Image (cartoon, rainbow, N blue to C red; front, side):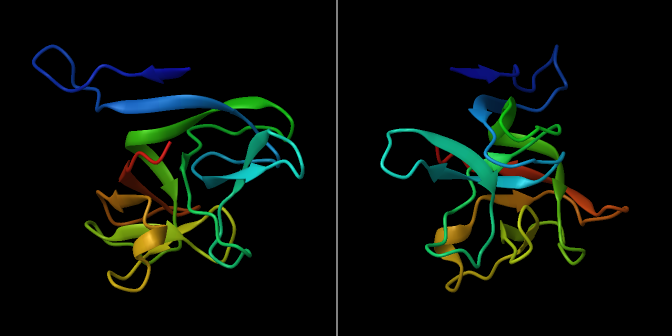
Length: 141
């Protein structure tokens, strides 16, 4: 079941975001991008940290707005505005985001090379320590 924040408008300045609840198959920190991992031989799945060097590569489905302990249920932003996406330190506003080889971290992707891995677009350059950017997440699930 998904939850949705009411979108922008005259009476509401909160950007539109859609959340879904998932069972974490690993510890996830605030802002990390996640992908689905299916259970071997079962019809179950969990979310784990997304990365671009797993085999096979699983595209990111969203971003954790808060920390989730391994084995616990937690919210994932599956579409819309994500205020803090953990990023690699070189993301600029307008860059397409893909998972990095460092699990859970987003980096800039290249059109024509990383097309199947895009999960969002950066709204701001990344900044801070740890490094975060604001983004819009594309709905995959």
